[in-house]
Image (cartoon, rainbow, N blue to C red; front, top):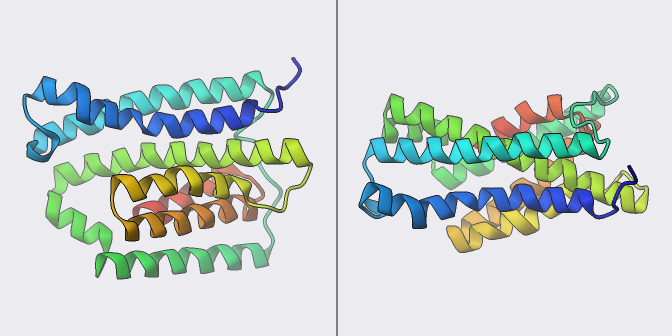
Length: 214
């Protein structure tokens, strides 16, 4: 099957739009189901929301992986072994990300969320984060594949740029200005990590997950 030159961009944007399914649940379906607005949900209702969201996102991830195979893109192909300098840069990016997170949260995000939520709610929230991180990674991978299929160049983190102008910019509207700026910076760093691991999604995912949740 001949590859459509736009298909990978479409798949990347589909992963981004899938993130928006949460808003459909939170502001349309679930208020009627729970009988109360999102701001008034109990811990149980918040956990149910995360489970519903993860179910939708999980189905989307499976569909996107299937679509990638259809267009002969092996998402799980092992990249070339990263050189020492690449791991040094990845480590620097990881440390910088953790410093920004510490300053933004005025301490450890994970510790503060644990004590704010309690152990049960905390576990479900981080399961939710894991599904979100998976869609973020798909935006990176498909976006990068789109750029490289158009230009035959592989040294620009287009996946991170696309993530910044979609997921990153969306935070200006869903949260606040500072969070939007941090999300854009994070998106660009995620894109760099994907290139530095030589597009090896198996290596990129745990690094991006740590950068995202911590």
